[in-house]
Image 1 (cartoon, rainbow, N blue to C red):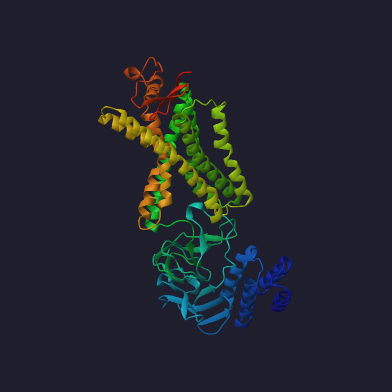
Image 2: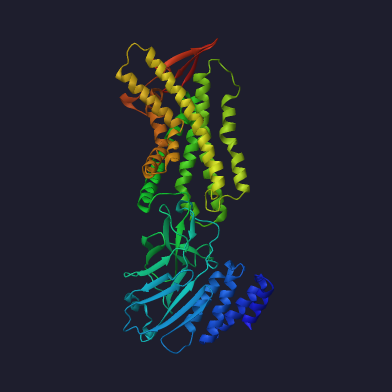
Length: 558
């Protein structure tokens, strides 16, 4: 009767309505709850389940119910002999009664004949499982295997940990269970072999996972706990797991290209570097905000805004794994939006640094711009909102970061590339100015050369030129460039502190005035700047002095 209901409904349309699905599920539960099920009836139930999951019906709300129902059919089936196997399109159920006293392991395999003979999946159970057999049933224990050739029952909600990449299911699903037993923490692990549905590229990563029924608020989701990959080729992956459930292989198709070992090392470097940068960016901000004499000029105010944007991006990067672990879609969107915003703001302020340098260093006319810093703030913090609004309306954050390649490259990569090209142009102009200064000098001391190098390094940090390494992370030197990119950019905050706090004499004097005691404390600070050979003058009606190292623009007369 249930089969007739399903056939009638699917004969008229390609999917069951929500009410029809509820009716079918209710009747199936009634049949399964009866008790012992004969193989013919069990075969009908398996056929019905296969018809439902192969239709266009949205089975996500009842996925876990269908999985548990299929397991219940295997556990309660009454059959003669040692084993029975039931098959349907994209679904197979195999049940074996084993003698626990002689159990030495068991292997289940699924083989395909079309288009070519091959093994889709195998799962091998260790002899250690006899420790989990129910004491009252030690003479005959039932072991059940399931195979799913479709992914419809295993769909996660649209939220994935951003730090784990963009994973997609790349194998069929196979499961094993023992009736009335929960198997976990096996020392002799379960061996599962999978054939990939799509060939794995050399740069792709794989992950062995199991279906966690409790994840995502009881809707289910993939979890890698207790599973690991011990070998993967283009077409196959071998997994070891210390428990029994539904297993599969995920393929990372995100924009990452390092191996597992390199990825782990890069992740550690990223977190350590961002942690260090966050601390020293905080010190930099406290220093410039607390001491009024340090924030009286435009460069210092721009530096405060740049440090704020960098601190926001590094802190969100550190908190992202924790925030996304809640599997809350709204929180995921908010996290991705905030991280995207602060990254874009950081690059915008790097670009504004270059604009200020150009106006102060290259332009020969003294241009007065009213509300100079206010206009910079409007661009640095407000212009980015336009990009963010487009992204949010287009729902680009299904994985706590930019998921769509088109918008990833247009709203992030293209924007960063544009800023870097402009900053590189200003950087070249500054190098030319330094070169001209060296040519005009009668002699060049080692101290002067060191000061020039320090000035160039400082500008490299402020303009964010090290981010350009990301555009060269391909080819044979890809991994090396990824390491350099990771090290230099996660330490950008520390470099800001080093060049614009630790190496600046006026900052050190403020520290000694307000933070030191005894003979290290200064009683007075005049605010005058010592002579620096890197101060040079350009004029046209108005005269201006610009310090390459300290980036202090001082009007001499007007």
